[in-house]
Length: 286
Ligand SMILES: NC(=O)c1ccc[n+]([C@@H]2O[C@H](COP(=O)([O-])OP(=O)(O)OC[C@H]3O[C@@H](n4cnc5c(N)ncnc54)[C@H](O)[C@@H]3O)[C@@H](O)[C@H]2O)c1
Image (cartoon, rainbow, N blue to C red; front, side):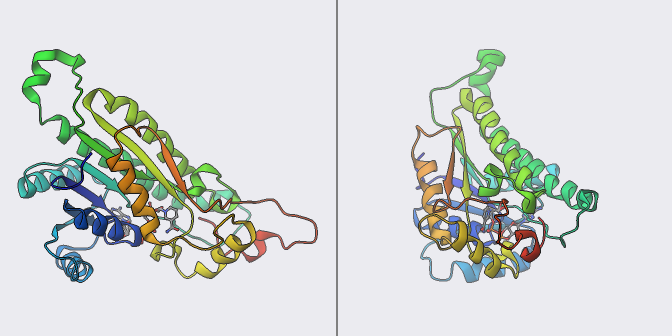
């Protein structure tokens, strides 16, 4: 799908990766609806700061909790009112809820529930809100065709955010990892469901990028990357993720896929003889 002139919603758009995806879309001439949990004034102030060097940015801010279906639908309606239409979703919003390491799995149930709500149900809700709005654009065509409506026109695109941890959930990511595996599953089932409507659905799986989601533990992850990374053995920059997002939006033949952007980094949980047990030095479980 061409980016220029089309309208995209970026959730988690004030975060490290969301803000860079918004910048990329704006620079390529899109209308960008940036959504995040910050209240309106705060969000708009951050957005102004983010786009102070971007000429003619066609961008607006929306307060949104992705777990709230009514809010999601209201934001999508507001975007259509503001920009005339909606063509895509870049769904960056996500959390990694970190807690101290304990040997009891039941200590993590509350965090797991919340993680699933935001990372998984939020992905379903946002994909549904945007896809339903795109589908509502051709009511006459659909009404004439009955329930088996399908089109050859490319009408929309959705990019979800999984993670290297979703491909290889290990002990340290016992909650976050499976939530990102579920994002891979949702991406494929949504791609299948939405294919007749001309809406493609793909995901990206970042490895390590220094953004606020890492909290104060960036140094620990960096060490893990140096031990278990491929090439380059360094954190990626947000632009490496937005470059992949751009390709997934523009290349109409990529559908139902996930792109890992990890530099070959593998999450390993094996303890080798003579080596420190990774649990001893891990900053916590997610
Ligand atoms: N940074 C990394 O190393 C990395 C690695 C793998 C995957 N990811 C994934 O990439 C995505 C973006 O992460 P990031 O690095 O930009 O992190 P970030 O913490 O900088 O940004 C995440 C954004 O999501 C927002 N958010 C959280 N809960 C929300 C909710 N309920 N409703 C709406 N917005 C909500 C936050 O306010 C924040 O702005 C996430 O899904 C994350 O899991 C990041």
